[in-house]
Each structure stands twice: as structure tokens, then as C-alpha cells.
Amino acid sequence: ILFPNPPPVLPHTPSLLLILSFFLSIFNFLLFRLPTIMPPQLQSQSQKGLKVIQGDLSALPPAVREFVETNVTLCQPEELHICDGSDEENRVILTQLEEQGMIKKLSKYENCWLARTDPMDVARVESKTVIVTKDQKDTIPSPLGGGVSQLGRWMSPGEFDKAMTQRFPGCMKGRTMYVIPFSMGPVGSPLSKIGVELTDSPYVVASMRVMTRMGKAVLSALENGEFVRCLHSVGCPLPLKKPLVNNWPCNPELTLVAHIPDRRHIVSFGSGYGGNSLLGKKCFALRIASRIAKEEGWLAEHMLILGVTNPAGEKKYMAAAFPSACGKTNLAMLCPTLPGWKVECVGDDIAWMKFDHHGNLRAINPENGFFGVAPGTSATTNPNAMATIIKNTLFTNVAETSDGGIYWEGMDQSLPEGVTITSWKNKLWSPEDGEPSAHPNSRFCTPAGQCPIIDPLWESPEGVPIEAIIFGGRRPEGVPLVYEAFSWQHGVFVGAAMRSEATAAAEHKG
Ligand SMILES: [Mn+2]
Image 1 (cartoon, rainbow, N blue to C red):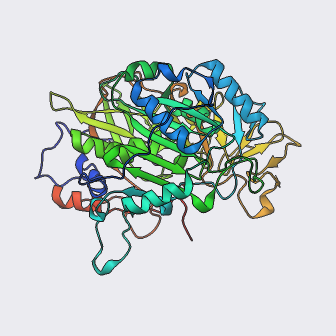
Image 2 (image 1 turned 180 degrees about the vertical axis):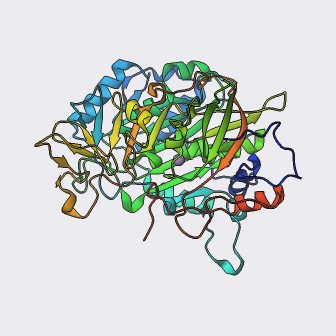
């Protein structure tokens, strides 16, 4: 790896694939351009007869309390649980999930669990993911001739109101509403942002505890400050209208993931799957954050962050932008084969970047864990990930071995004599079945701090200095592996026009 020294300045030198940071945000600018007017909120009422099973509603900051009460009125949960983020709380949640048959303990490892979802709920649903703005052009450009934009989906405030009314009234009946205060970025960092997610899914609570800093400390840091309001329901009030598949509540017919950037609201209904339900990740840290970032003058990007040290001991940090399931996690945890080189990981998915007052671009990883694609991860492709996930990890839709272990395509591990594999569909599996044992979008949800090569500065409140940005994707045909731009302007154009293979991380056909 070459370090341009000093970093090149616009616009003379032809670039390599290291192109300037700002063009990825073109996409984000297109999504969140102008403020618009949104429908009125539902009225808050006092909560008579609501059972608070953990926490103190009256001790919440007034704006959080109002957010909770408004949505208790709307969703009508039976109980309220305000999350404190403690170990004890986590134990209780995991035990409940186990009792409900939503997760299973993996005896081979320490505190590891396996969830199998309803096969109808296995990936992000981009066709049902919308941005709500008054004018369509504030969300997506309108293609000439009235075609469908490939850059996102817009919903009008009126349509959104209708969609809410169709879905949320009474949607948590018989269930517990969990209140999850969470911080994206280290608690108290000037680059961090706070959100509060209301959810009726204990799987979301357990996962958010891995993926974000969550609980009491966040409420203390919030005081009366601003927060992103996140509302999530699996959309299966009790009693059930039809039996669950794999004990996994979801409502695929009515799934909708909506963002209201003007109000800093996220609303997700019908899916329990990570990308649709862990609202701190794609919904907040990429979509809402890119709008906040635009207003505040920073960048929220789909990029890993890593530190590379050369044999002379000189260390540089870089960010790299690849689409989902193209190897961000593997690159972020690279084991260099060049003697004397070292790679350390700051983040594997999202970078929040801001120029400091010296003009240096600095980045934090807003997340606290890795929600990585499991298939293809092996002792060969990513030994650091394999070492990370052997404790405190929540797996979803991977296959299971009869000795209490995990299995997936590309794991490259021979099984002990007599050990059998149960697929993500909960059926005895053999390689002759003609379909994969683990879902192609199966995941591990694991604490970043457990990664053997986690960077010593990964939680640094001021972030790490970024000296280069790498752009990449996965395209087995049609595009050369190495591509040189004619100029910086052309490089920006090439980067902005780049496409990649369809990903298993989002639903797609063919
Ligand atoms: Mn991603």
C-alpha cells in the first residue's frame, strides 16, 4: 500500500483508486436535500394501567418521556421496560428469548446464541424502505420520462400518515415495549449522537446492546439534549392471528421502514431482521445521520476504518467504501502477508467523518459491534473475525452443528466424525441438498472490543485521522480490477457512477 505524501490536492494529478471523500455523499445529498413540513404528532395522554416492569418513567428526560407516552398510547403494549444496559438485564432478556424459542444456546462457545428467523424475514427490504419528505425531489431525483429512481424510495407525508394508521394502533398489544436509549459513538464524544428506540422485540434489545452503547449512561449523557426518535414493531399483536414460523414474529405483508429526516424520526414495522430493526445502524447512522451531517458539515458514510503500520513503524488510517457483502469486514480485519506490516481495525461498516480545526479529516466508528455476513468468513479469509465471535455473539440464520457449534458456506472446517449439520431452515442438512446450509445473508452480531486487532484508538472521542479513502465493490465481469481516472474530476465521476453486484444483504431478484 502506498501513502501519498503529502495527500494530493485538487485537481491536477491523475488519481489511483484513492479518490476524494466528498463524492460518496452525493448520494446522501440527493436523499436529504431540503427541509419540509411533516404531519402533526399524535397527542400524548397519561398512561393509566400500564405496567412498568423495569425503570422509572418519571425519571426520564421530559422529551424522552413524552416520546414513550405518545407511542404507548398508539401501540398499546401490556408492559414497559426501560433498558439500563446492565449484565443482569441482558441475562434476563436472553433467558426470555430462549423460553420463547426465538434463540438457542450454542453449547460449544461462551454465551453464544442462534436465532432462526421466519424465512420471509431474512434481509433488508429496500423496496419497502422509504424517505418521507414533502417534495419527492428532496428524496430522489425524478428520472426523465417518469421512470422509477434507482437511488431510493420516496413517500409523501400524506401516504406516510395513512401507512402509520394502517399499522401502528394497537400493534404491541399483549407485548412488552422496551425503551432503548443508545449512543452512536462513544458516550459523551463530541462526534457521537444519541437515539431512543422503542421496540416490542427482545431480540432487538439483545442485539442493540452489542451494536451500540446502550442504557443508563446514555440517558445521563443525553440530559435534555436532542435525540433521534426510533419506533419499531414486529407487527404481531397478541393474540396472534396466525401461527409463527420458527417462533419469529414478523409481518412481511405490512413491512415498512420509513425515515422522516426533518423530524429525525425512524419508523419500522413488520420486520425483526437486523438491518430493518436495529435502527441505530443503517436507518440512523447512515440515512438520518447523513442529513444531520449535511446540516452540520460532516459526513456519514458506508465505510470501514482501518489503521496500517508499515515496517518502519509509521501508521496511517484509511477509510474504505464498499457496498454490503463485498468484504468490508474482512478488509477491516486483514492479516497482512507482507512481513513487518500491521493492520488494526477501527470499524467495519460505518464511518462518521469531520474535519477538525486543524483541517484534518477525523473519523469515528459510531457502532459498538460487528453485524457481519457469516458465509465466507473462515480461518483463512478472516481469522480475526473467527476469534472475535467465539463468545458473547448472537448468530442469525447460520447453520448449527450437532455438537453445539456454528456452520456456514466457506467456513472451510472439517467436522468431527458423526457430527451432523442442521440448516438455517432447521432441517438436517447435507451438501447434496443443493441449497446452502446457512442463509447467504446470515449474520454474527458480536462486540467490536473482542476483535484481537481492534485499534487502540477505536473509541477515541476525537476520532482517528483519515489519510486516504479506498473505493471498491464486487464485479466479477465487465469492469477492470484496477482503474485509473484521467483527472480528479473524472475520478469523482467514476466513483459516483460505480456499481456493484447485487447483495444478499438486501432482497433482490435473480
Ligand atoms: Mn453495511
